Image 1 (tube, helix red, strand yellow):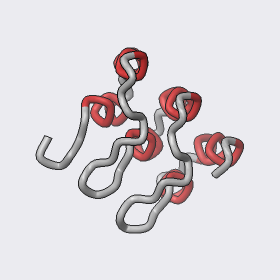
Image 2 (cartoon, helix red, strand yellow):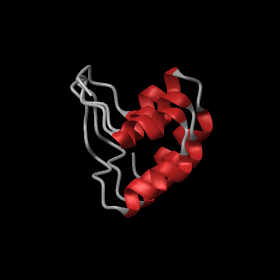
Image 3 (cartoon, one colour):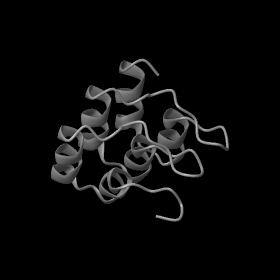
Image 4 (tube, rainbow, N blue to C red):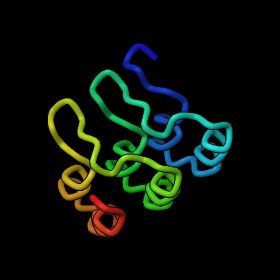
Length: 94
């Protein structure tokens, strides 16, 4: 869209696990960024979708990528109170 969101961003944000899997199976770039630097991983973290976070991480999502404001996924998860997701990210190398 006009903000740079892809179908994968939308699916990750909305929690559509099956759509996320379908798109990834079709080799969509898991590290694509919108105009603010948000990746699908950032979207899933912000919305608390831990299963999607795990799928994206298994497919190579960059757990250390930062949005343009300088926040990484761990910080976003912390701000949103998503301690379980923060743990997943830290276990994944963040």
